[in-house]
Structure formats: C-alpha cells, structure tokens
Image (cartoon, rainbow, N blue to C red; front, side):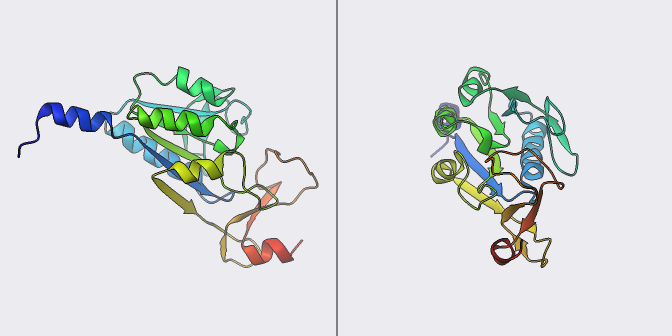
Length: 192
C-alpha cells in the first residue's frame, strides 16, 4: 500500500511528543537540551526555546550550559506564556523546568497533542533529595525520559543528587559550583 501525501501530513500532525532530560546539577542536562535543539534547527524545523524569567545566572535571554554553550531563548513568567508564544512551532525546548509552575505538564500535553515535539530539561530532585516542582508529573507523561548523571565530587561515582554546600533552607537558591556539588546517594546521605 502506498503512503499518500495526505496520510503523511496527517501522521506528521499527530507526531507530537514529550522528552524529559533530568538529573542532578552538573550532569549535562542543558548541554543535552542544546544539542537536541541545534539538531532540530539543522533539520530546518521551527524551534522555540523557553526558560523561566527568574533564571539569570549566565544570560537573561539565552539558555547557557555550565560549559558555556548557549542557544537563544525567550524568558517567560509562567508556563501559560509558552502556549501563547509557540504558534507555528514544530519543536519547543524548555530549560530549568523545575522552576515553572504546576501548569507546565498541561502546557506540554497541549503542545504535544498539537503535534509539537517538546524537549524539557530540569532537576528531578531538590537539594534535599525530594522530587522538584512539576518534574515528577512531566516524567510520568513523557514518551522519553533520559536521566543523566554527574560525577560525585566526594568518591568519583555516578552522582544523582545536588548537595547544597551553603547554609540555606530556601527550596530555590540559584547557584553554581559555589553553592552546590554533585553527589552519589551514599555521599549525599553520609558526608556533610
């Protein structure tokens, strides 16, 4: 049976998906997000990239990895803004998803149901080792979940936790190597 052009267009319309890249700080989440988005741009797909307006660590208008690779993005106040700014888009990238409100999973489902490929990067756990923001729900609705690992700075093993090295009980504390270090489960729970 020949695949008609109409069937191809219909299949493309229905091919939306959600991909989640998660892990601890310094595990390469943003680096992987940028890699996937650049490949989509090379394929000449219409790509829009979003990040929370509160994330100004490296640049106000770009998603930037710890290795200083970057890609232009749009900072937004909330998840609903992504829907308003993603018309005529084929691929949507979202960085630092853990900082978004609880509407992000619904927004991602809406985009995917419209046939858009949604690629999300974020911390799966906070500094206390507890699920972070909308990430657990995003992981449960995603077609693909990739958990990436850093290197534990205490023992050299695979790190899945973000250990906070400065005193603060605030759930959200923007920081880098001066405030956090990646740790494995054992070192996270036994070394202070």
